[in-house]
Structures are given as C-alpha cells and as structure tokens.
Amino acid sequence: MRKKLDMLEELQEVDQLIDTHKAAQQGLQSELSGINQAVDSAREEITILGTRLAQLETEKSGLEVTHAVELENIARSETNMKEIKTNKEFQAVGREITAARKQVTDIEELLLQKIGQIEELSAELVAKNSLCIELADNSAQRATAKQAEIDKIQAEIDADIVRRESAIKGIPASLVKKFTMLREQRCGRALAFATDGYCMGCNMQLPPQLYNNLYKYEELLACPHCQRILILKVRQQ
Ligand SMILES: [Zn+2]
Image (cartoon, rainbow, N blue to C red):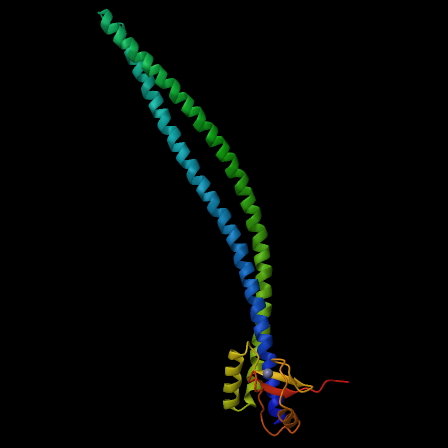
C-alpha cells in the first residue's frame, strides 16, 4: 500500500510539472503571437497608407486632366473671339472665358492641396516603412528566442510524459481512473497530505480514527471532506 501511495505521489508530482510546463508554454505562445501581431498590424498600416497615397495620385491625375481641358477651352474661346462680329456674342464668350479662368484657378488650388497631401503622406510612408523594417527585424530575433524557449519546454514536457508513463505502469488501472477523476474535480490535485490530524488539501480536521488508520497503510483512505486520497506526512521535528 505504501508503495502504491508513493507511486500516486509520483504521478501527482509529474502531472503538476506537466501542468506548470504547459502553462509556461502557453504564456510564451501568446507572447509570440503578440510579437507577430505587432508586425502584422504595422504592415497593414503601411498597406492602408499606400492605398490612400495611390488614391491621392489618381485624384491628382484627374485634376490635371481637367486643368488641361479647361486651358484648351480658354485658348479655343480666345481664338474664336477674333472672328466674332457682334458685341453681344463677344460679351457672352468673354463671360465664358472668365468663368473658365476662375475654374482653372480653383483646380490649381486643389492641385496644390493634393500635392501637399501626397508629400506629407509619402514622408509618413517612408518613416513608417523604415520603422516597420526595424520592427520586423527585431521581432524576428525575439520570435526565434521565444520559439526556442517553447521548444525547450516541449522537450521537458516530453520527458515528463515518459516519466508519467513509467509512473502509471505500477498503478492499477482502476486507481489511475479514480485518481484522474479526482484530479479533474479537485483543481488538479487528487492527493492530499495528512499532517497533525488535518487534511492539507482542504484544511479540515480528520476524524481521529481515520487519521490513526493512515499509519497502518492497510488501505487507501480518502478525506471525508474533499474526497482526496490521503498521504500521511508527519511533520519533521
Ligand atoms: Zn480534505
């Protein structure tokens, strides 16, 4: 019985090691995702800026076309003017030209605005690009280091699993089943130490007869309060 309890204790210890290692691994994994996400969002931002820049360029080209058309119209009207005979017609074309010139001025103002926006955005894009390259470089190094840590822990988990398999071999299947069920129900701990008449799993006092029976190692005894399998641990004096 004592040997069985020792093996259960070993099983609990290795299970807890696996839990701790897996939790550490999960933490590292989410740090790794965070690193990769930062790079992804920096790249995404650059893509958005690039799209905006292309849009501004298109708008600028559109304005340039309109500008050229208006200038052509003015030139044509001015040529036509020379052949106009009546004063009334002359005045009408004159008004057209004035309106067209006003439009040309408006377009030129818009063009200047666009050029300003393009310059600003281009500068921003260059700055963001170099920051992104730096970030990606830096992140790649950090990601590699994190991955190495994750792999190292995986090797430990693999070793734990081997240790668990050999621990489980000496324990009857029904007991392993009971242990596993208890572990799930009791926050990862199926065993509890019994010390000075108390269950250390739930801190409740054990019935004196039960506590005394623990010294006999005749049968598996469970705490009547938390149902964990009890292992006697006499306090070292
Ligand atoms: Zn208990």
